Image (cartoon, rainbow, N blue to C red; front, top):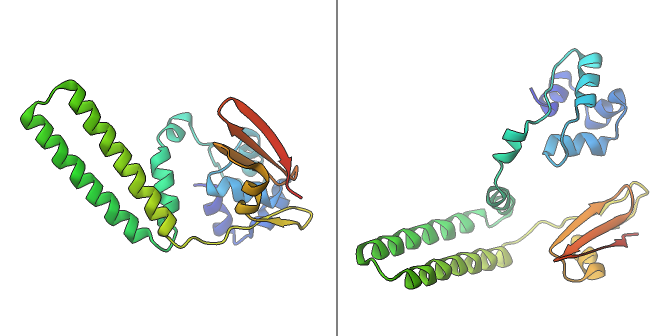
Length: 187
């Protein structure tokens, strides 16, 4: 049983569950969505309060999650999920055909490396084009103090970055670009 199943079984809201466990509703939401790992301490508190055992996620289960799968799931949630699947199927088919031709002809190692690099670049470009052309939901991040900001507004404050971490409890966005790191105030 996971935290969401326990909450639904008991007919509780995230806020009510959070109060009974002495944590924020944001923490409950993050645990349910998989953005935050259930700690052993919180697992013990759940057992104490509700008499149910919810095990923290194991390293093995967490390692099984693949970045590409998460990216695909995020794309699937948008309005153009079918288009992405069609593109992925076409790309997989082209990749299979290229590999078959390569295997049959046994080209030089250098040519094979160039073909693989070309396929990878083609896949990346097609996925990027599909994402750009897909209608995306408007995402608004709320502060505990009531402020709101969109991801586009955050990126405008930060500029280019490889990764951005949002901490609404600190009203900050932390960014990473190559070896550089930094932070900006959100509100």
